[in-house]
Length: 341
Image (cartoon, rainbow, N blue to C red):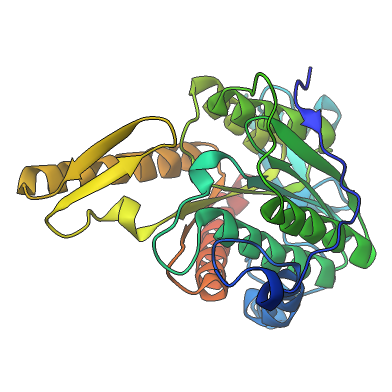
């Protein structure tokens, strides 16, 4: 059962950033998210290449799902639809195989945006929450340009907003409106907010129920404060859907600041970070690398896309590079297993 309060997603007027908020990068502005539609050209791939690059051009989606054109056969996984069994390959290999078809256009695309407290942090250019919103806007506009239906879930510790996929401009605009309004409003205060790791898992479980098999799901998060059950839920999501995890991080999380003493807080506890010692600096870098590699390897184990996104670097170019690399990798993997069928 979904325990969060579902915030109303009705439009709320958002003032111009120049009038209300001089701190660019700290809050999300609706005008900026709408203007992102002019930056999506780099996310497209030449049709003649016909790679499996994400959001590639063409008349058919580059993703696998339920369609009419046979794409390949793959090993059966628990939970798959047995009606799609490939009995010829199964008989030949003595292992259960499933037919995979090319999904037609107007595919449901979900944007899962992490808006928990750990995302409201940043030292250069923008908070992680702002980078997540901008990335979601770019991919939302790119999906809209392909004719897909856009929806999603924006979740925090105490509440969430769930958006059913819609076609046309209404689908992407409903998402952008929610992202901007949440940033402009103070954080929701409820008597007993859900534990951060629990909210992550519940959001994943919710999207599992809301998305039909073969949907495309982008997850924007820093992947902090998540437990083993959250990881299991992500793997389940990757079994039935095309999932891309966008790993968002700030440069200060990756590399320790120059030697010195720095007061730090998580909003409740306070402390001092000492970076005079080389051992401390090395341990600091290793802690980030461990989290980064854990998420990357977990995604790789189930065929989930992994795209890193730094808050201090250009977001469109990072998405273009990451998604094209992911598409090329999947194209190579498909070529390698084509002989099975």
